[in-house]
Length: 171
Image 1 (spheres, rainbow, N blue to C red):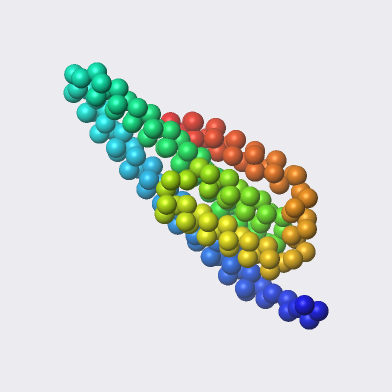
Image 2 (cartoon, rainbow, N blue to C red):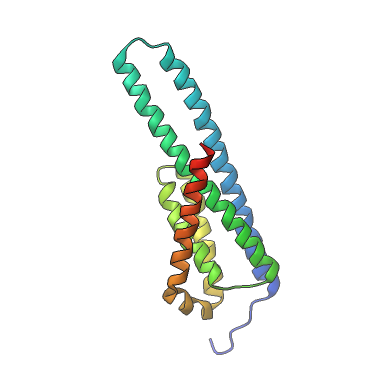
């Protein structure tokens, strides 16, 4: 550890590029889920109009509410990912490792709560969290700052609130 080799800038840039690529991949998956659910909602609405049975109609309405709730959560995830991609692109342009990586990791861990039950998306989010951990561990000096920084927590809350508001507007 005394003669720890400094990371090459290309290694750091490559990790940022991989993280950015995976974020874009995850966002495309989320958009596909949203499109599928919207199509399914339209099908259910047509089916409900043709039903005379109140019990079946009630069950379909419950299913519609479930789908709409899931779409709202996925839109929050989509907006959060868009924000993260902008941050990662900015950090890669600046060749910077900073507490921003800790913010990205924390936001991804919060996003994981929104995508529970969607196995493929959840796995990608967990992989992204591990990549953020790799970036943090490569630069040990930033780790101590991350644990004590309440500012990051507040910033993550603001991002999720803004994403929630944006998701409601998209409805």
